[in-house]
Length: 316
Length: 96
Ligand SMILES: [Fe+2]
Ligand SMILES: [Fe+2]
Image 1 (cartoon, protein in one colour):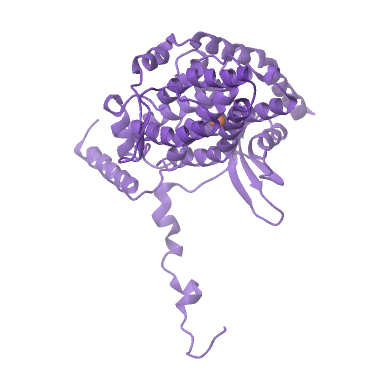
Image 2: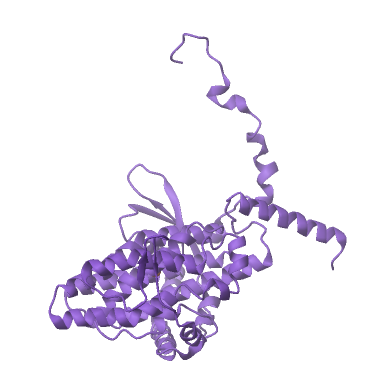
């Protein structure tokens, strides 16, 4: 039914919502919000949560082969943080009306997307350095922006996450710096890791602004405060000097400091590769889905035991 | 086995240091209160953020609604005489 009265009420809601957004106020779960805002946020937040969860897999690959007990402890702590990040964002997303079990089911059945970067393999120990330094470094740039987004639960989850994320990127950078002071083979391993990860990391920021279908709405609603290209540039500008400081060469012939714009210029990103990885054809898409499903299955007995224990105690 | 098991949610409140109030930190899912407490410790207290934790079933919380915002809080909005700076003190008086 679409009587004039209902349309009028709807318009009042929209106006109130828009003026709160432009006043920089946050929207909270029980506030009225446009259907599209709810839908886009749920899509973004669930994809983000899935990324934290799937992101544990490439690093988990090196847990049993970390070069020292200390490195192993650090990697474990980082991976545990990522599980927590997934949890914070799932619980933020639940406030939009979909429960966590439903979202996890969408991940396990392959209906949901997660960050394309985790569909690349981690082939040697230096990859743990490159992932921490570059992947988490890119995540920091993204998440610092999202910490100011208009949806309260998302923003608060991001603030919490950003506090932990610096440790991730620093421990990665330290691994790289350490290897660059090592033997020639170690230096080559570190450089090789960056050669493989650099471009896929730049793709983490998503398609170019001219080809980003959801960006307009998200920016209008202050879910996104900066465009994909702006955030990508910010990441490059802060990362290149870090690479230079430890003797890593960024694998981009066109990379060049522009003293006028005070930004780095860089080569062309292969967005066809991004599209192909997102649509399921990256090097590890199938492996990640299998690993995630196996982990869920293998953990079933723990969840069943927890329920049995709770039931037994409730009876006693 | 269904993958769609959803344990009840528990709101987590953490006390950061001795004497400080408990503040809302977030929530966890768990089959009972004891496990909710353990999960809350692992999720919200890994970096000395808490010396004490409360967990409360999320369904047990009654909250005011955004629509209430105006009328519900009205009684507190127009009583300026509840603030000390409503009262003028005679000149020369430094302390009261
Ligand atoms: Fe994370
Ligand atoms: Fe991280």
